[in-house]
Length: 390
Ligand code: NZQ
Ligand code: ZN
Image 1 (cartoon, rainbow, N blue to C red):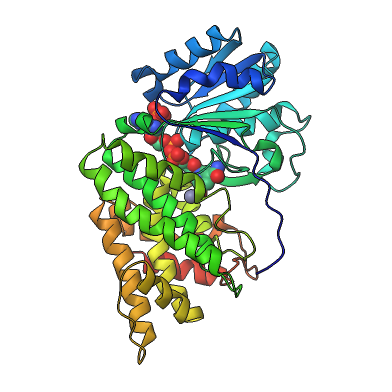
Image 2 (image 1 turned 90 degrees about the vertical axis):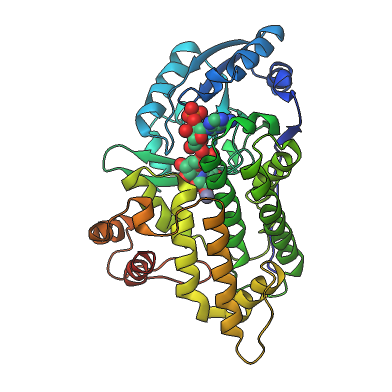
């Protein structure tokens, strides 16, 4: 295991009706004028937005609002939010929604405290040092943004989808009421489940040795997702299964299962080009890319792939031919994704083979660059992975 420091100070308030605590929580963290930031209307239709407003009003906290965040959130909404926060003297941002609303809120929070263009943080030109405090009321278990110091935004100029990270954007508190996820369409639920599993796999595939504790934590989260996801696809109102998935989504991405080990993250980078170009759901893109990436890199550490095949996918170890076991595990992952309604090929996603050169170019490695924590990939490798996903 490698040295690490782990500091994840978000306060999680979990369970039924917890959104009624928003007002007192904002006060606890020093907010007096809140921007409520949300998406395309699900929180209006469900009545959640009204309940959040009522809680803020009851606590005597002033607020303004900005809705309309799209999935794969865009830079335009961030600029709008920064202007609004400055005009209204906002000192606290409350995202009500999924990863997209939360990531947009984080971008606004950084941008308000920065004299330059907020995109500098996403283009790698500056590192965020200061941000308005951000908090969340989560409505979909997926991105893990409710507990992470990360934000992913797409710039409309060139449709570049990029991430920024910083401790200053880790949420102060996150309200996690699993019942709020019961209105999700099955497809979005499955996209979220795929993303959660992908966050674990990005960490599981590592070159660091002697990481049994985090290996076993990763396996536990994967096993829970395999058990609970089909339950909510069958019965969207299964509160207990929703609760387990919601907590898994947080655990999968606040890095408790990834400390002390190198991590890969190439599947995410390769996927982000798909959701940038086709505006598909991030989880759906991962369902297409991650099994292809696994197949492409399996020879790098056959025994690690065989380990997850046996421990998570219940495959029988073939000691004469461990690669056979490893490939069975990858096939089991792909069948699971299909069983919950995910696409697993380019065509099912609406992606085109003819776009592959463009996707490789925007991935941005150039002729000689390499990236990845588990396996270092070149542009040619990235192209091969897109082709394997056809
Ligand atoms: O916009 P509304 O109307 O709210 O509808 C949303 C949206 O259409 C809908 N939805 C959310 N909760 C609902 C609901 N519909 C009915 N009932 C509910 N309770 O679901 C759709 C997807 O929402 P979105 O916020 O886009 O989903 P998700 O949480 O999957 O976020 C995806 C974004 O997060 C990024 C992804 O790249 C993508 O842009 N990621 C962020 C990460 C981070 N910040 O740490 C890490 C991830 O790897 C990921 O890259
Ligand atoms: Zn993800």
